[in-house]
Length: 256
Ligand code: NAP
Image (cartoon, rainbow, N blue to C red; front, side, top):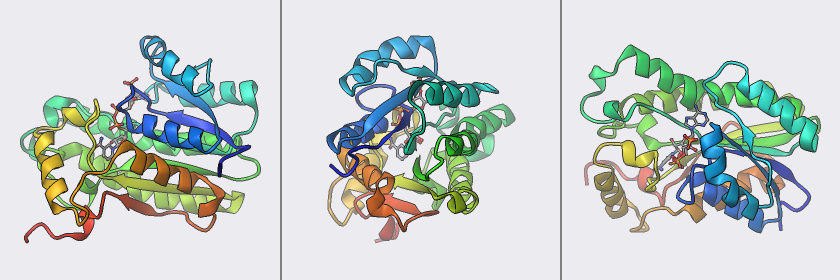
């Protein structure tokens, strides 16, 4: 029960297949108190039963693309529960029509929207979360190997993840003096709603499974447990890191 006595926020739970669900299960197993945000009233209704299973009966609305909503959400959380110890940011978006074919066809509108939701939102989340962490805390976001090497069809999302990873280092430097750690998990591929928007995703899954030294894909539990570790005091000396949780696929070259 390494999270006993700690409470925090999970952003990006869409359903039971979400990576955020694996994170919630693991944190819950380790004794953490959980809060959730969701994008719209429609999604609030959809996830309220799942959130209730984790002891959260009041999901907070937060569309990270709308100016001011992140600040309002964190103010609301402060009023509801007071200071928090951790945040897991598990949010990304791109028009799925641009997650197939050539990157060079990316539109300006989708480039800006993908960057806004998938990268900038994390900066704003960290800024407002810090106000709720007067005694320090830990914040984790989710990234993917497509930021480092070309992965077919990942396209604009790869650029958003590269920027997100750089922002992790700058945010860790900014928030470190306040005892707040900021890290990212670079997760191997998992079949979720967002992932199924990436062209030929099942091929990526199969390719990774074969390439992995462990000869398997990662699971929600693998990622959830690694996230719990990073959010816990066991990771007290770790900040500004991109931690690969991908059954080792990133260590294998593409030509073998
Ligand atoms: P998911 O279940 O579809 O979760 C994506 C979440 O992003 C959804 O809950 C969605 O909310 C939320 N979101 C999108 N736009 C938003 C907005 N404007 N405001 C608030 N929330 C918004 O997919 P997932 O795979 O678990 O994705 C979670 C994270 O893991 C993402 O950052 C993704 O890039 C990353 N990741 C995934 C994989 C993979 O293979 N699955 C691998 C590496 C990294 P709604 O449902 O309300 O729209």
